Length: 371
Image 1 (tube, rainbow, N blue to C red):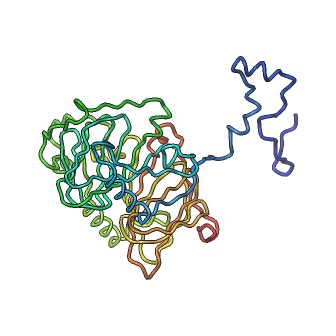
Image 2 (image 1 turned 180 degrees about the vertical axis):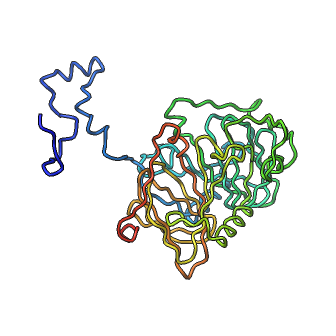
């Protein structure tokens, strides 16, 4: 058989003939059988296909509604008073992407969300309020706007608000991924109203691990970061230093840093990677896409992103998502202040299996068509 050459090449038909070959499909269906060739071209696609769509949850819409929930249902009744962020492409299923859950949680003054634990790993990014606490595995931390707090898989955790103002933060979990694997476990401490004891000094993990030190013969062996709270004040200072130095700039991401496990250099949680990026006035990042799905939270400033050809205008407190393999780029007007975006993604799930791919748009000016 002659081989095709570049000058005589022709496009082959995709695998997956629709020919039933005279088979009795009803009989096969009763036996829970089906010809693979009927669906092969739908399964083996040229590039990823997803139900997830670009979407933005405006803080101006969310804030009054979570506060209304605070007036109508107690933390004790709800256990976790959360409004879920649902992706329109998932038809109401609990997920902002196919692997990541997100929502906004509210703790009113004097309230306690009791101690429990679960298989999904979780993160918190503080939106409003100052001084409410989270306790994880016996360590307590007081939270401030922009702080990034980790809650590892199967770690006891509770929240409380001893201040005189509401406290709201963004939750992020790998819950849809855990549910897809049927690996969910959940447990309450005691009778469901108990609170774990605080057994370590306030912000113990930051002092031990976030200053370039590690205790001699340290026994910590988790596959997650030992640091509980990554302070936004330190993140903002580091981004500013990187900008001044000018040696960490990226056409695709602006000035960007990764939140890391200081013991490994890897992600803070085994299934979720987290980042912060500074977009400077007048900057328009080059479009990039990858196989990870991700959520962005606006820590500071305002601007616009084009995600998969759709323009999303955002400001402080807003959250938006970028689906798998969707081009994304960000822009801040010259007349505006610098913007800071926090993002988290599911790339750590893909990378151990060599599923992860990334591509920058090199054609033209490196931008999608503006809308």
